[in-house]
Length: 242
Ligand SMILES: CC(C)(COP(=O)(O)OP(=O)(O)OC[C@H]1O[C@@H](n2cnc3c(N)ncnc32)[C@H](O)[C@@H]1OP(=O)(O)O)[C@@H](O)C(=O)NCCC(=O)NCCS
Image (cartoon, rainbow, N blue to C red; front, side, top):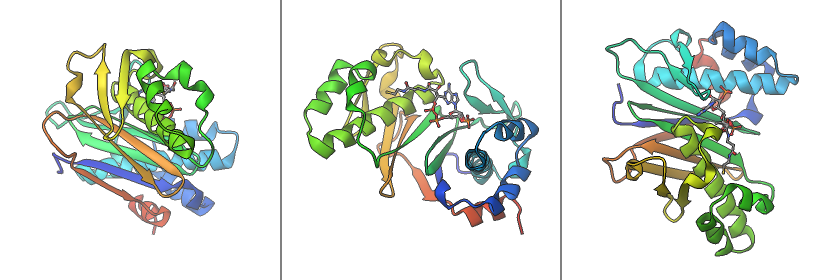
């Protein structure tokens, strides 16, 4: 078991085909399958199914259990968590999807959050005032043109990853913490006395997406991230398709 690793796996959902769907759906539980069926468009159903299959297969990479055997409970703010035996290491995960990409992060005993956004359109800079702190808005103003768009998406995904790592989602006031760039880090967090233990990672995935990760990882200079893309055919075979 990879105790001291953060596993990051992503899948380009534009490459999914309906033939993959049955293999992915076969390893989900009844609740996940029911949620998948609620999507109006088949494309969204396939993406959801792929995201949850990828989460299960990534969890299995760290533990070796079969992907279908994972069970989950939903936390008070909606974050899914793995149900583990009392004496087993606590495996934590988070996932994010956006058009074209789904990403999953898994670690043992560390709170973790991940976010991905598509960056092929101009950033909605006009909403920065509503979502970002004064310091984060100043960061934006220090860059111009496409660099400002890039800074917007960096700040957005980092804030989202941190909110998701803490599990609280929208319950966490957006002005209660500040992210900074170059390198990406948490500059302050009012509701978290030990905020300095948090580390961020951020990178482009292909030409169209940016991903961010926040993890409670106080004891390392560089995060031991093992990250790679998973091909839809590979995911199918991990799900047991022949
Ligand atoms: C769910 C939430 C945490 C993220 O939503 P989102 O950005 O639309 O969605 P993502 O694709 O990144 O993540 C969704 C996944 O996060 C997980 N999730 C759900 N609630 C969560 C929570 N409270 N904390 C962490 N993860 C959560 C789920 O696995 C979900 O996937 P699923 O529905 O397939 O099971 C949302 O409630 C939220 O709070 N969004 C904040 C939006 C915002 O204002 N951001 C401003 C940033 S500056």
